[in-house]
Length: 358
Image (cartoon, rainbow, N blue to C red; front, side, top):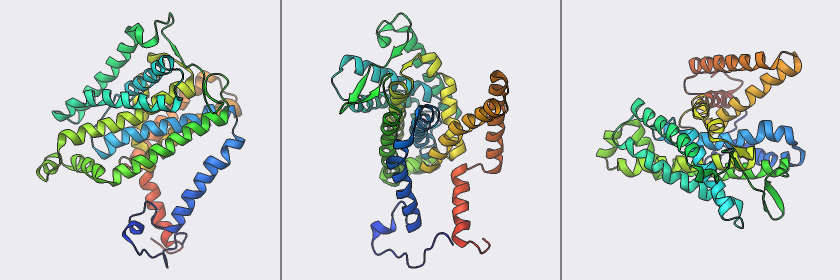
């Protein structure tokens, strides 16, 4: 009985509606925060930052955004890579045009620009849904990549067509550029993930989140009871695109440092984030984090195992990584269609009665 509920009484409505109503869950959450912000920054090195933690944190933000749109509002999107590109190019233009402004403000403004673009491409959702909407967002993906490739203004007329993040700092600590420390990269991405996850949790538990879920479950019935499909669907596209734009801005400025839109934000990026959401669990904040961790950590583990430990050729190991990751995705979807978040929920229910049978 790891989850002791005896004596854990609630005396007010706010206590009864807590995100973590069981005391053990709250202690575990606080312990994770202490480790994330008080321990890891002092021990992290460049390898762990660039290979594991920073990509996980950035992809987790993107998965949160897509889960709000697809998992909570039921609007299927395949344009995540394009919206990440909007965030990346927006923060690049802001950083070069206004070099004296704080980089955090640049990232948030890039998210707002992406939200506006997301609302424009979300207009077809008012008339179409399902696979037809997925095709429309896929067209947005290809259009945005083409736009950033063909219009030189977006990459400041660079001969190579690439964009490079200039060096920026906060309180004397470098956050972008070649001189950025591993702990600074980790802390800025972790802070953004914490803030956006807190925002997503509160949005999905509030009135707006209930409207999203009503549209997802049955849009006609939701409209009959007074939910406005126009504002609800467009707000989901706006919030989702804001999250994805912030992740794209961080992906370019903090993680990559330099990017070319076709290589860094292609269609494979859209499918990668979609797989994270599906594996983690649709309609789950925790599922977005777990799905991102799974698809970031598993390839790193397989590469270290096949190349580092077994000494296999790099090209052969890369093909086997794709095959193993694909096979595991299929197995997970067959074993638990609701994702890893549902497996965790079932495990917690069993732990609440352990050692007695469920």
